[in-house]
Amino acid sequence: MSPKPLSKFPPGTKVKIVSFCGGCRLRGRMCALGIFPGVEIEVSRSCPLQIKVKDSTLLLGKGAGEKILGIPIEE
Image 1 (cartoon, rainbow, N blue to C red):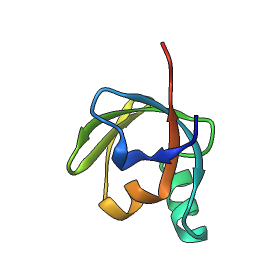
Image 2 (cartoon, rainbow, N blue to C red):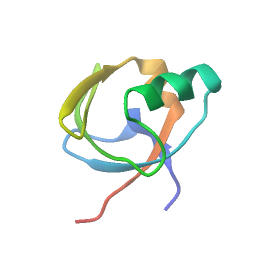
Image 3 (spheres, rainbow, N blue to C red):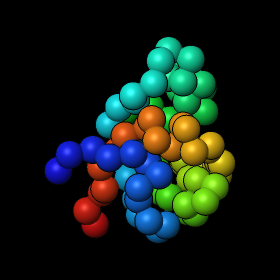
C-alpha cells in the first residue's frame, strides 16, 4: 500500500507515519511534537486535522497534513 497524506484519512483511522514531503523546518517541528517515521497516530477529526499522538491531542494545519505521509494500520 502506498503512503498518502494524513489529510486524506477519515476520522477514526489509525495511521503509521512513513515520511515527510516537507523541508527541515517541518521535520524539526513535527519531531519536537513526537511525530516522526514509525510513530502510530489516530486521526480524530479532518477539518481542522486533529490527531492523537500517544497521550496528546494535536491540531495541524492543512499544509502540514498534506506533507506528512502515512499508511493505515490494519487491526
